[in-house]
Image 1 (tube, one colour):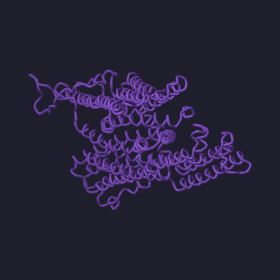
Image 2 (image 1 turned 30 degrees about the horizontal axis):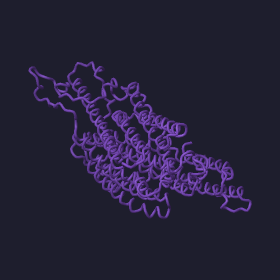
Image 3 (image 1 turned 90 degrees about the vertical axis):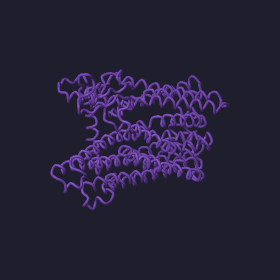
Image 4 (image 1 turned 180 degrees about the vertical axis):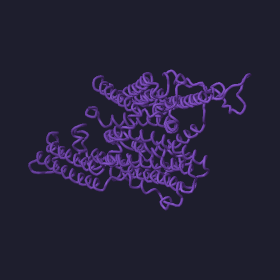
Length: 601
């Protein structure tokens, strides 16, 4: 509805330049803490103080230590709010100073976007705590509700109130406000699902010392009993997560330049029309990413972080008890059992990564193989004739292939962020820096040959490099564990073969997708021919570009029905030849739902 009433130039101004400024502020202000803190123990795994009735000093000390750890997580999460607000204020002040001659409506739009970002920053600690406790449902609900409110607000202010480009800024404020209300409502109603007795508990507080908090038994006259380790009072329990967050924040600068490089290039060198066309294509293309791939990536990141932490802890425990592990077959009986424990966790983590890679590959193939044939019809039906240009069609077709690469990269980098140490994060920063330079080198020649679609093509090339690097690191990670569990195994000397092929769908499924792609392209050619014949009895194919939506859509209904049939055929092939993978995914979803219900109870 909005696209039918908005010119490409207005869309490019509102949803590219202003949104680029907002995304930079939010991403740089919160990504480092998000990545670091989701790797911490879940607060909901800690018992509440009012549930501890035992009289043993050990149990009381353990409960106090757990409470201290929970508060330490809260304190670190609360750092995201002042950081986000400071960045937002800095960006707003810089924009006002650097653009003194900007038209009033554009300045208002930019400042309203900053206000919307500030509202999101206020509840960022609640987001981190929800994610750290695997409460992913609240994010889907909050962002879905906020997107709906933003859409309604934009349409009402743009069409009925006539606010013009300022409508987009006001709608972004409504988005931030809705996000804040949703998180506050969730934590007020369900604080125990994240390990808290009430919403009021979620605030920064100084951590008590071991004696004050009950970690060490006191002695008369003050202090702790002899031999007890005294933990001093502080605001932060462990500096390691903050150091890791600093590394992630540095790396996120380069990742953001890489992620938003396409919009930066367009904002600096393209016309407002080209910017609007790209934003339209990106919004439609990224709809699948936001609805299907992003929730899966976020859930995978959380699961990988928790399983990776458990794997590391099990390995360290086994090494402490038996010394450096020299293989399961060479250790003592108890040592072998401990080694088998963490080796089993490593194999389970590898199997989960392969399963998720296959899932996103199948989803991506649907868009990659079936999407391009229906892009022209989509543009005619949804945004209207003004958007149904060759430039827009080409950009959206390239984006269908880009979705496939985004899904694979999202899962692989989610795993990489979950298990990477500080050295690997720094190496990843170097890789992203190199990818940024590669994109800068490819953007201009690709745009010269492909127009706006060249930006998407350059992104595809860069994404292939990122996928290759992340897959290499993942293979090395599992090969290291396999080598340490059995150094005599020849399979341990090379990258894990299972990961290389576990994410690849069955060849018969790939063949079904290929046939569906060829068939739908042929159907699209028949539709274009029918439209041309309806528009010009002389069979001049150029007449299909003439006016008249009815004529252009001639033959669209059979084309769409044929596409539905192809999708059903591909789905049947997946159900027949990927039965085991589908069963594993179903079990994974059930286990995740059972875990959430148990925490809510």
